[in-house]
Length: 140
Length: 163
Image: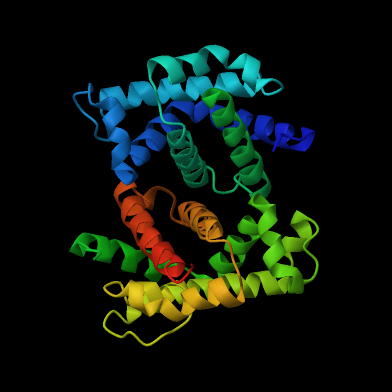
């Protein structure tokens, strides 16, 4: 499943509207992932505090959304553009790729919460495809 | 055996009490058919599904979304009643006996409708997004956790009669 020109335009347009709240989106999505899918906590056992609002969750949410923003800018070639991040997640962090899907779902939920009007079905499908493509690039 | 805390029950009942089926039902199915277009194969009898605009204005799509939500709601309202009813509403009303309540529905989906069970998860994810849009910040992480647990129990019950 590859991104059409229409998908890319929709993602870029949505990102322009939401990127101002990137930190908040990242923090909320991560909080939800840890609350709704407690098995993901195993990756963060080195953090003192895993609750919503804690410093490590906020900081990491910001880092993750920074990655998403980078991916938007490299939307025409995610595999090449995200090579370093892919190696990090695969070899250093050793994240089971199934977890990318979980986090992607929570990013979509947060976008729906914060931007109910802008998150139309068209924006939803484009973003869903983009995050899937991003996850695939990270898993390679 | 699924165990529900009082808080989880309260969260789920609260979500349904605030949900406008006539409004959310159509949006749910629109999103499913637009975001996961391969699901359109199950709705050949629904007429024009060729574009997002067509899907959004298709009355059969809208009606089906409402049917599914009533299914969930009935489950909640008949917690002690294992009589077979329709859809997701049933699960809500039968939260303590979702597995048995959904026996007939599971057979319907597997034998008659022949729906690939992976689609139940897709529908669940879309419904979560629809709820999130409506409830916005009221849809807290704890409420989302209870909701997704409820959905996974419903999905598991629906998948049980597949072989």
